[in-house]
Amino acid sequence: MAKSWMQVRQTRYDLGVVHLRVSVDRERDESFVSFDIFLDSKELSRPGIAINRMSIRGDNIAQLEHRLFQLAEGSDDEINELRESVLVEPGHQLELTSLSVQFGVLSGKSVPLELQAVCCRIDDETDEVAEEDIPVSAHLECKLTAK
Image (spheres, rainbow, N blue to C red):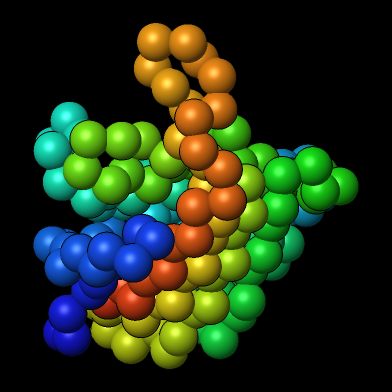
């Protein structure tokens, strides 16, 4: 498996094992392929990823292959939201304002992803935006878990 990395501003971080959890969910008469991308930050001590519960309409995990998923704050997407997802640079949690994930080939137990995001950092003490428009890019070789 190739090496995963994430770059926040101009700082590049090598990453450990990134997990991609995928499931097919049914709600009323619609089916969704849902995914989470996760890398433990060990309580903000190292880079981390928590992209939680994003979905596309579909009924087969293979529909993620070569798929471009995009979401921006304030979009009219009816099934996804960025509020529950964060990226972590050591010492800081970054809230997403936009997210783009390009899925590669689903081959066996691994999936390559290219991630682009724009984030903001919230000051822990004041709850105010401390820094805006933080660029993040990543190449992720994810360990695939299908439910």
